[in-house]
Length: 62
Ligand code: SF4
Image 1: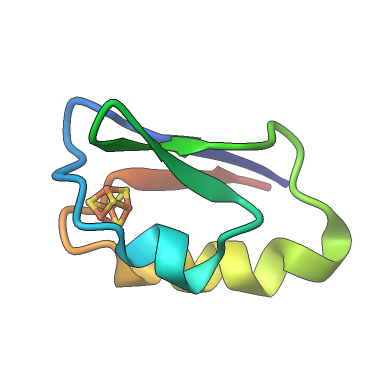
Image 2: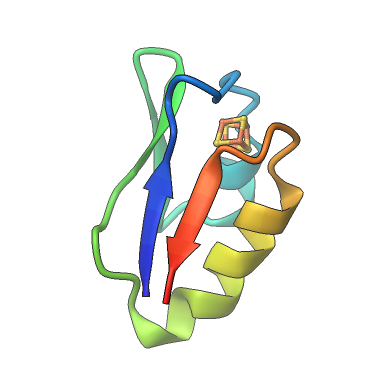
């Protein structure tokens, strides 16, 4: 599974960082994915972050 933040949509609310600190970080006030390939044990967290993002900026590729 891959995860990607669309920084053109992201508002920097930090929700995804709170949800998955191992997968997301704030860089220049916007979220950025820390990994390209999501480790298996963090897949549920990645999905939760994508569903929770208020502007749907997080996309997941299976
Ligand atoms: S939850 Fe969405 S809008 Fe908020 S920081 Fe993460 S990617 Fe950006």
